[in-house]
Length: 173
Length: 167
Image (cartoon, rainbow over all chains, first blue to last red; front, side, top):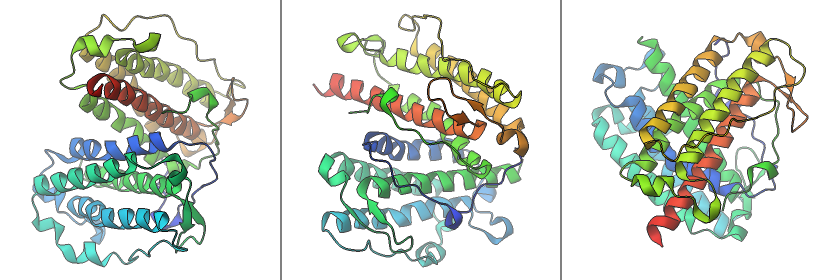
């Protein structure tokens, strides 16, 4: 395959969908822990912690997904509280850089992600159809983001890091 | 409740650089299905609620759609104007053990993933008309379309399990 994957900050998002596709988005979010576990269980520790070209290791990518789950949930509350802007993300990802996820066991990282994501999914299942269409402005993109768009964004972010992990694994084969 | 698939508004025109993400989704469907059906009685997996597809039929359908997708990939990269319609031979998946249905999907899915990975950037931009939607579709659009279609059926399976296990 000749095409390189698009960088996260170069991604363009289309939030124009009017139809309620929230059940599919929840399903994608629910599936991320299983996909991650399948991909990296059994991968050697030296590969899990390797920083190829100085970029995040596999464990750091997983840790980053864990680090961002509170932001996603906080933004859910921002939308429900009718805030004008969603809370900002730390674009330099200080939390992930300082967490030293490489020192944590893979089992621990995967269990934390599974458990945090389960809580997110349970919360999403309680949202009403009206709440799915409520919105606030995204602080970086400066566009209105509905609850449905926000969690589509999260599902896309999961895929971005899963694809990055696949690339890392491929560099060792 | 899942929106009926044929009512979905679908936009195409994805760049080749998006393909790695869509392949990642297509690859992840099998483990998601495995985790959903693990430990569930074969009778529940074969049950048709209100005459609708059973869980096994939903999974088998994804494999059949993969077979159509594989043919469509060849058509797109051969410059065929209009893609073949999605026509399926009637097949009863309910007597099959679920592991056999999953194996069928594993086989078709891995074959499609392998095929996508052999395509050049030029081939990823080639398009043919989708016979139902009447819009041009590239291999990258097809990967996205099938990933969305997978999610639709995962939602349907979840609904069946929710109804059956929590009633």
